[in-house]
Length: 214
Image 1 (cartoon, rainbow, N blue to C red):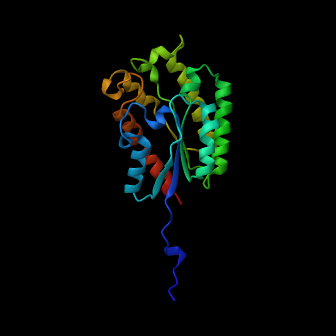
Image 2: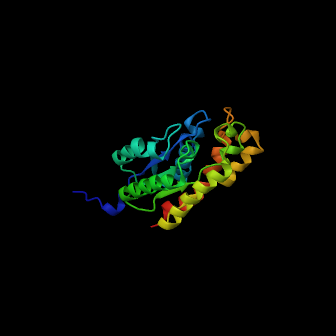
């Protein structure tokens, strides 16, 4: 009789769920090969981290409340080991105040962390500055987009620090969309595949380091 040692068994791939909005499903690009979550999985796998992208329940226009109502049930059903979260731009566009945004964000983070086997395997992303794009000003309603998004990003970053979570700051990268047309999608509002790739390029080494920790 052959006895197999559990220590020699191959670990199952990590289950990854990407939560968010249009910036998570990479609106403005074509195929999935141009989406940063898919590129991230490909690069992690090449680095020896077995991981599967199980679900991207994000949708165009989703706010934190939409995420709570529609995406958290997918998270619960999927039972992932790793999650990325990029949310908040549509809260700001719709005039949700910072207090309510913070309240919803805390609810999301508490829920996700409570369901993760490793509590810090949740990576936050800041919100890009869509105001620098050709169509961005149409959504300002007379407000300063950069200042408003920066205020929401400060909340995201504060929660990341408070919880010991990795936060990928794409806001500075997004500023280049204001001077380089190749970084803006054909709709004049969303990032192009090239810009999304820069986000993944920034995120990959940090996420790799996080997931390699024992």
